[in-house]
Length: 249
Ligand SMILES: Nc1ncnc2c1ncn2[C@@H]1O[C@H](COP(=O)(O)OP(=O)(O)OP(=O)(O)O)[C@@H](O)[C@H]1O
Ligand SMILES: [Mg+2]
Image (cartoon, rainbow, N blue to C red; front, side):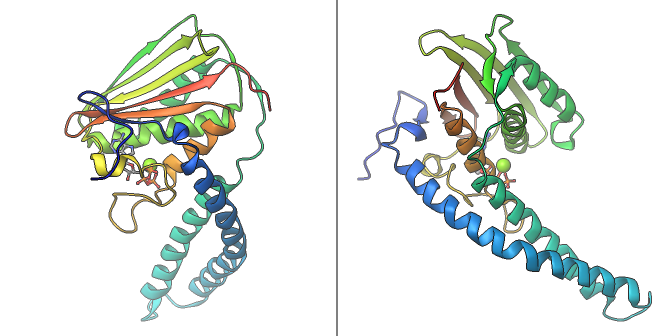
């Protein structure tokens, strides 16, 4: 039987950052390779897009193979999204730190996303502690983090459900806790240990990059924080993020 160190009563829980840093090491090695590959691919990909756009402009409307050129552009754009994700995943070593009010950033990000088609019928509940201390963080990266969790939750709920956003201080660890709790389809046990791996996705081929959570994991780790996930299949998922007030870097 496979050893599972992450079992808790009825929930299945995993704390990837405490897993004797195996995942972190693997992500660091993958990140380096990903960055090299992404750099190598970025330039020729840009060329493919430019030349196929030029070709499309030059050929007549009734040219029989026009559709094929449009397909090339579409597929090259898809590659661009993957390369962008790889670069984001790999380029996380620098943080522009400043004093950040997490509640304000979270509310701003969610407000901006509320009209997103994925969230149209989702009930979003804010349980934000007004006494949350400011933390030293990179605001853009926090926004990116929050977008990833909200989008994933929206996707898991498939147009129906409740997303609860919670914040509270963590005085013991001198930081803040941020929670995203959805009533979506949940994550099967066998996937829980893999969701933070780059390219792990349960979406159909061509739909997701599987980089969202690995980028988020990197951002949290870079801030000196950690993340836990609890999930019950068919009921929902809660991601609990801890971020320290300041990091010794
Ligand atoms: N809130 C959630 N509920 C259920 N499953 C989730 C949730 N968040 C993540 N997952 C699972 O983790 C996988 C990896 O998520 P991640 O964000 O890294 O990639 P993705 O969403 O599949 O692709 P992308 O982010 O590029 O659109 C998802 O495919 C899904 O199976
Ligand atoms: Mg995602």
